Image (cartoon, rainbow, N blue to C red; front, side, top):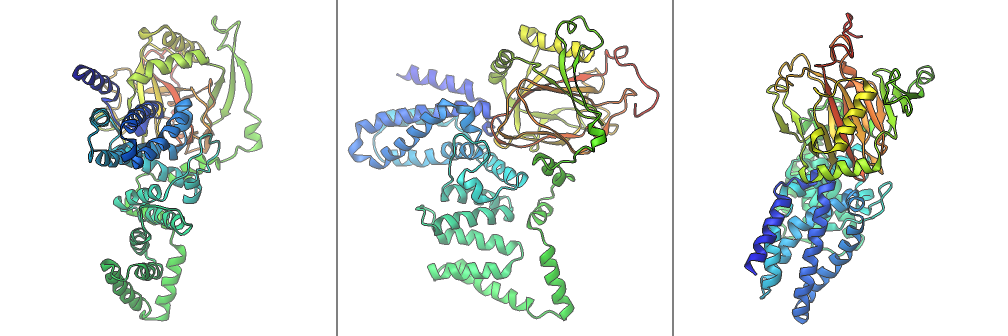
Length: 539
């Protein structure tokens, strides 16, 4: 028996040695099967002590139904961000509560199973990451807390509602980050659901305690005072509420006695102009200057090409100057944007090739990294939420074929290109605006590779995405939407070798679905005769 548990422990250790589950929907699917196994183990225990454990049995029945549905279409199920968040929350918090309940009795079999598996569960970081992803989606796609709580997202198959406890947890995570804007939104949603009669272990006073403070921190004293009075009606002896009541009344009295009428007008004017989310950004020192434009592009509110510019975009069969590999079967090429020139290739990677690439990559997926502009060293970053793996041509003939295909179409040397990078985006997965090439103030960006700067980017879309997940170019307003089996290509450098700053781009958060991409970063070395240098800097 001990040997069995050792082997089980080793198996799970090999599967989950790397956490950050929330950064990859593909790897999160394994957690659904883990949870399903736990439910099976739990039901076996229930059969032994059913009469004394009715509370535990109810829990198991609920999760049994959920996991059966979820494992029929794991990626589709976890493509709904609420399902992903609730999976993180269940495995990180709620199973721990259940363990405490079961420990009150003798349940050696179930506890042993749960204890072994729990060490490979998602962590607090995963639960917080999934929660922050929901907040990010809420902001980017301008969704109300009620819309998310009801699961009313575009293209969803596995609709899931959030409970009062779920909403409260989101609000608490925002509160712990001093994000009072989102604290208010989610505590208000929790309170609304309680007012509508939803049963919960979370009481109204607790919710209003957080809510009133969040509102106060955003400068709305009158609303904070109103909520505090409501709290005291429910719990007249609430110590903090009684203290806050006196403080809020004192502060309001000070506001009602400004030095002059002009000052009062200024205060009113300031309140009208106040944008709570902008204020929160300022508090959190948001480092992204073009966030509003980035989010607009993600919502499909980008700059539209003029009819004249649109008329210059074409679709064509392309053989790259009669390349022998493309003569009999030229590829379908479509112009997506004119400056910078972004082209899409249709039906460029087959379903079987995509399946092979994903199978090779999935066991090796690790938290995606970025190149430190100062040191050139790869490191994780909070603005890149995905997991990636690198595949070499010598590992599998499919990768070799893909590399050759890119070379035939682009005419660029692949020997000096980076390996094929495969990425799977997690809950609300994104990659905020960035450049692929190393700029002049980053002289050591790719020094370790010794192949020069990144001259071009080739990006395969290996899945359709139900909502969100566009590739947007923030400087020019272009948006390219994922379509399975296609690829997009653009040059990061002008022929002179100077960087094209109009190629600054981003991967928008995935709202619903699982986004798989793979990309090839092509470098300067080896292209000297394939793409000759021009004299002018911007040519």
